Length: 115
Length: 109
Image (tube, rainbow over the protein chains, first blue to last red):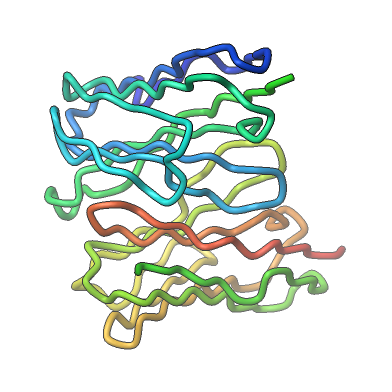
């Protein structure tokens, strides 16, 4: 049971480059999330999705885009990378409608550095 | 606006003490609340999940309570050990899922 898988684990980008962070889950969860965590800080919500074809902005969406074409995948796109996007990115999935099995599962994180 | 606050931001205790970490949230229409542990440079480890209809959950030396009407949850750690040193995060589940900033716990031998 793989859970939530994020790729890549590490990446260095140059300013202005673009990239896609991949996230896939095999638990058939409807809800998926992207967070960023800056050093010494908590997790800030970037985007989330409550089902295939549905996405919504979180607290810090600027500079990012997402899509949710399937239940399993929720990629995060960075366009025109900036140093302020240097952070650790976490993807998560859950399904709060399946009580009591509503635990949220997290990927291992992607450490991104923009230089 | 849904806000999640954790108090204290940092806590240092001698080994063996019992301690309480606090989490408060502004919108009580939650699905559930989950406590996580994060070690430096690592990912999140789930500790306890409390459904909105529950009052508490226990796992070993950990006990989490939930008072949804007042927007509060506490994580109680009994007989703390140096291995408990980590950052503890609470996450409140709505359609989105919001985190507090965490409590950084240090347990001194």
